[in-house]
Image (cartoon, rainbow, N blue to C red):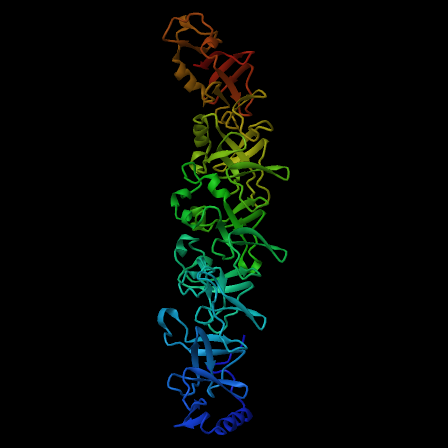
Length: 557
């Protein structure tokens, strides 16, 4: 809108001549020029004051001294008028009038008024606590009770400009700047300064700095759109926070800004001791950039997590894969089937890849032990696996997260500390994907790892109950076996061999299987040895009875 500066239109030269001729035609009554100004005498010969008088088609105002007012704002019977430099009442025009309080409390240099066909300025005539709007030349403007055009952020309940830096939070309307004033409809980009608590909103992202340039959307009524993460505008989806700012990047709509300050909710990593919860993460949504329309993201996407979603990865700039449902909410703390494949998402919503230690009841993940020290080698893996409760289990998801990331079942080759191991994971049931523990198809597993003999030992012993893997020499020590006393033999030794006896009790003629019933022998392929004799790397010969049971342990002299 283009408004005139300071004064409305200037009366034409012809009009001035007509006014002057009319005024000078009066003698004892009517218009008279005195001391360089015009005055008006009524029929009684009295000078008129505080009143309007006509000259031709124009009205002029006589002030309290009886002098014709010029270039002035006139208050008359609670209405406001304006007379131009020639004293004529202004009609159907914008006029800018100097603001005597300019600069105080952010007030403007001038106030704009609009004077109607009857000369009266538009002003708020509604009951207190309501907004006053009028359409002028196709645009809508707001005026206060004194006729001043309002601008910037205006609240519905009082209809006046709010000069506070955070006025955008409570105000419903935006009426442009002090020289515009037209009510905003549709999209508008607005600069915000000194935003309160900006660092508690989404710190680290320039989009949430204390000085922001943000998009707002104003409905046909002029009211801003607020509190929606799925608003369709011109066929596209957008999100808006409770203050009306278009959402971009990470956002948690349901929890509110205050909850972002609860740092204990986010934890510092993805390990089992982190305080984050899946319910918290599921309320997060990811929106594209403002340039891309800030639509919430559905399906798969890979980005750096937000500050309050996963601080550790945010701080390191580590991007993660996420999946959002049709409403834009993250999958978190669950094993989810997506297009026929199963994927796991930690308590912060990040997709899990590789070997993972999870506490689950099937598809719900309660904890994710993302700590390499728990299973970064064969020894640490086995120590961890043997100490797990029944609700914990190892799972395996593709190491190539950018290509797949889905759950793997059956037999898999997995590298620990640069060494390859065979694992087997359940193919079905409520624990689908969990590593097998115990006997399966004549082989023993611990947390999915196949228990095989070290190639240096050739054979090793597995405790069927504890799934501990030990050497033959350790077994003899654990059982208290010591050799050489043939009179107290256990089993039958071949000539030239030392038979191991039990030194603690009289076992003369006893069967060794009575002491080794909880043990089986495995070879380097993980197969349980059923019968025959096997010699390990230390020279021990283990003889089996044909039913996987140890019958003799002997060694050469």
